[in-house]
Image 1 (cartoon, rainbow, N blue to C red):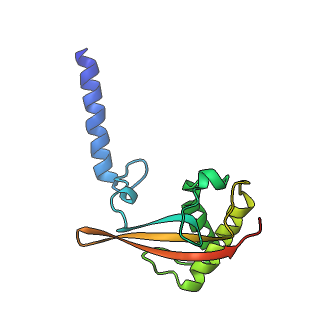
Image 2: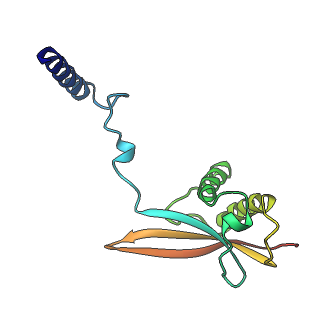
Image 3: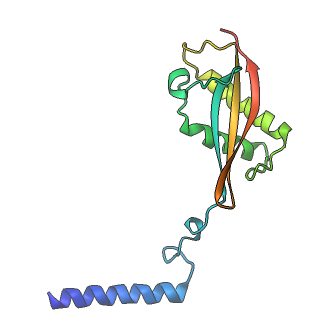
Length: 144
């Protein structure tokens, strides 16, 4: 048993020294991508013209959690810089149009609104407060 403890301790010490010697090299990494986070986050939702929420799980077959992924993919394809609300109104409108078209292609039959809006909320940290800015990215009349 003593040999096992000594072997494991030696292995751990050797691994630690190797990490310190090699520095930032996979798999000997401090994982800096998890070391800091931006002080903003985006959330997306769909509403009718009166700002009544249209839940994804009820009206669309695309999960709500995929909206953000779709947004970043579309922005990357369209060469739109994202984050910190730096997108222009025109860029948001273009990305919103593409996102809403993808959603409508996967809509359920329960959607009864005449007009739907795609919203982006930017949550940001200002001092010790979380601030939310809601922007309508795109609005579209739909046929039933």
